[in-house]
Image (cartoon, rainbow, N blue to C red):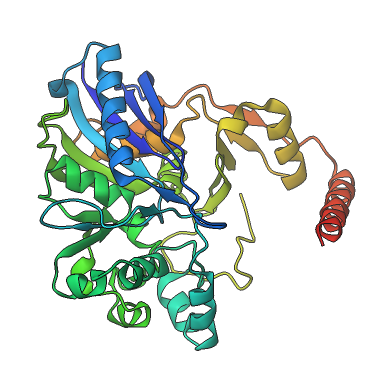
Length: 382
């Protein structure tokens, strides 16, 4: 039997999930890894532990169904997105622990950049705001705080990547230094209007272009696994940041469709179509057919409450592991494991729909009570 292997590299654990032709889960393996907090507001991971835990999960998942690497039709990778790793191109060794997306050490740098007046330029090119959440200032911090790193980067000796890039580099024994458009778009360095690394952004954040990976589509073959650690010969054909993968896995392919993931954080994404549109309030303001996933999505009371407050139906898929499913879909489509997107929609069965049960007046009253409770909690915290 053939499978799609999804490598789901998250913030607190690595997982591997095998999906069969029907899009059903055949096997799952998961390993947690250590979190490091060197100072208040700092969060780091060991890149080597990320890699070894992910490989261990992959092999374990294959063993559970008695599969061999030749049974893997393709590999899809999804990952914690803005986390930054910089490594030596010659040795493949990281020069510093991974700086995690949650890390706030570059808050002052972002404030300096905002005061310099570049935020409008950055936002117009990236659709993002100046915040340490994103990758660019983290990369700059490593270059400025690891002895000799900036000079080495200028000489082309170092490579930068988010976690997807790090995994692909190692799985292909350094032959592929790539990221996909979804991960690139979260770095503050990628111009999403033009679809390329932006020279002006690189200048603003003082990032040498030689560090950067090639940007590929989320669904295309990028290279075979060359390692002998149980996956040799399998084709990597799908890459997407975790929340974008979940959006695709939820089949939110039409403008107006949205999904919400209840995981380490609460992440809402909406498909706004193919035209670049910036929010005037730094928020998503309109929603439609909300789809949900993540651990808390199994709570029926919470899902009904969500539908009542929004006044729109909330749809929970039978397979709630939609982040991994999205990565699997992307890889499977790129290798003709699935013929076309419509085939995936036809295979989806068993979704549960929560319809709003409140009247508009009840909804307004409930929202008002919720807003007052939030305001009281803010006052208490102050």
